[in-house]
Image 1 (cartoon, rainbow over the protein chains, first blue to last red):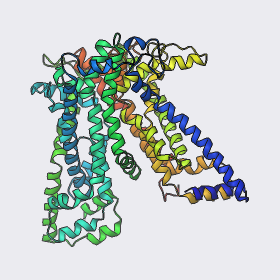
Image 2 (cartoon, chains in turn yellow, brown):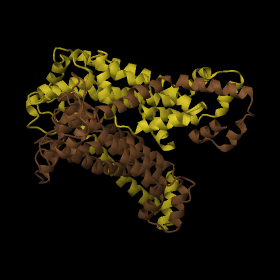
Image 3 (tube, chains in turn brown, cyan):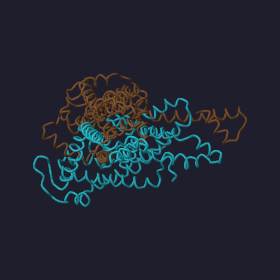
Length: 300
Length: 326
């Protein structure tokens, strides 16, 4: 890579002296590095600010916009750990984990099934249903929520997790179907043809051959579903009514509604607490997140 | 026969392989076809239930409700085109909501794409600590839509907050952005742009896919950086730009959570964060005007469809696929 760049540059500048060439390239790298550090600092500033602001007493928020707390205190975290609206903090965490884990497991299985059918089985109607599936990619979610709400209301499922999770079981996330399809298409067809000749049916091929091979893309889907559900605000806002069922996003909304004027400290600490698992998750899985996303989109 | 062609179209298979698999029409082959059909629809059961039960059915029902007055407690009453007429002639809040949403989409999306492309090109320029910078630039896109970040964002832009103080230091006294009707939309756009990382990653993968020979050949011909960008980078990336433009535009129409949190669900100040879906939510679920909200939902669907068709149509003149001589 750097070799190509240097050659390229030599051609551009027409400079033959090797010493000057290296020097000039080094200077460019230094300028680039400084620019990158400045940009990264600006981009990450809100997160660094949030982290340190959790230690500021509420009264300091109006007077000290800087990074460093003048009178650092753990008081905000103590308050947050006690929870809000009579519900302890661990309860919001637990609810969020339950929602995210179920959503992830259901999404992976249902979307892999649909993707396999579209990518590998010849069937009547495949073209029309594939087009329909792609069309839902572009569909604004709000066109379906009113009837969905009415249905779940009539079924007495308001304030349960069913309305929030049911779509995950029914492969409604077209982008994930598409992502898995792209991955399946990159697997040589000879593998399943061989299995078919040996008498395996599609169920067998899917579970024994395909599933192990598509683990990388399923991991990407799993991570994005987990994070998406963790951050989800609209579903819980629409369907959950009692605070003991709330996930973290709704707990944060309560902090935001009730105490934002008087208690910036607790609101900030609660935001931080909700964000930390996401950031840890990213640090652990960043390889899958970044490569998985790029692969699906570019091939598409 | 037809199913082979179909599959070739769907999967983009090379014709040679399709040819080889074409079996003479015999009893065995049609038995296999039947088995394939049964298998496919079995695999698709969850998707089919979701597609008809959670998407197509509700869409049609929303269309019906959009011609009624409905508050969920009593049965809907048919009112014809009243909701639609009211939307466009008798609801200044709707017009304003549509305007700020369009502003947000038309300014925010191109800006986000431009920043993402710029960042991707910077990342692609040198390899030093590239994976660190890539992660640093990417992180905001994972959390940008979360409630936590909306809260932080507001804290950043309040009066005497970090942004206000930093600008005052340079002699720019704008005050708080959150309560300022002129600055709150730019603030929301900045939040969207801050989440450029996901788009950047896709651009970066696209950039890595451009053959170095193209640039080398351009160098030999004496092309400068701008010409290389215009005549190599942009055309070679055009399929990726198209993909990002389409999804980001449609996503931007649906901004909700951050506007809700930043305005405490009010859409203020003076309706300047009353984005389309927030207004729809308030009409439908706070005011209980489900018929009216349904009409808003269908207007949104039609606008999004028109925009998508426009992007698709225009793509024929600016999107180039590899191997395409156009």
